[in-house]
Length: 481
Image (cartoon, rainbow, N blue to C red; front, side, top):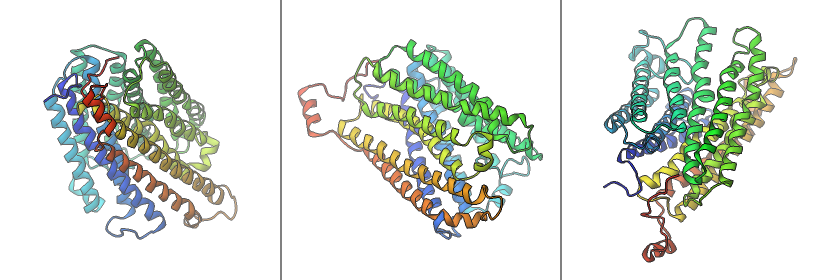
């Protein structure tokens, strides 16, 4: 039976993607804790899961579960924005299982087969694409990702073409198209190391600091439209301004990765200037979110989703904007590149910008997919506590990594004489690594609380309201903005 509040039955496909995303997210955090332990207890899980394997799994799970989250969000958002059923729900389900099975087999391959043997077994000699950070996937997995991405894009495009066109779906399509096309550079692996690193950044940087920002803007705008009731014209103007700034600074800001890889010196200027401007779109996004909430025309019953949305804008600015700016100028990056400061920026940027926006979409849409406009208030309270616990855990990790990075620069990078070796420096950072591990445990507690919120029912007062017809959150059709 179709849930009462779902306008289009095909939106229910999104639930498969959301459940898979949350399961993979949990796996990512568990492996992250294992990595944190290996920093301070070097033989933890060795030789069963050595550091290099655990790191591949941790980073690959991050990418895969976010892609599941983006796809699920699009499958929920696009039918509602286009005012039509999804073009092919069967294709969406087929691609879900293909992606899930391929991802699971790849993770198992990382864990049970030595990487060199895995490359041999999966035909890497036919087209050598393996061995690069974040793009470690075997050739069949990369081909599978392309098939899934193009099939997904076809489904979304055909849905948009047969229905209403909005600025939100337009921006989302731009982001999803860039996501699919830029991944093709993962197949380009020249023998020249400079060309290799250039093309590698076209995937890694232009995904997370380019087209993913378009996806972020469209998802955030959709939730704010639904939860605040602010006129679309107002939100459209903000969104177009933000994405214009994001594209200009993100594309040319790629130059901050070109400082020391053998490219011409003018990239130091281009990279420094435009990377320094990259916090501007994220600051604009923060102002945008607060402005929309303050101008809201309705008090939406799903206050947890509003909290996640505002949290996305604030923490996205701090992680991708402020922590990125800290070490993006070439004279500073000369000393900080590859230190724990980079790790601090990466953790907070991914959490603030992309993890939170996916959870925002899940928080808004899952209650509707389950037949009500919003979760019971008891569940929302648990969910909001989970936001603060995860955010505190992330703050502890990021501050610990930042402190570790500063000390690492001081001991290893700055001295012209008497600098400590890499491993000797790592010994001096043990306190920060233990603190980072404590932050990871706090984060996991917050994640468990978030997952538990899905199973929390209504309190006695809400059940009484349902019985007396006093404005229950259940069974009421959502008002459309």
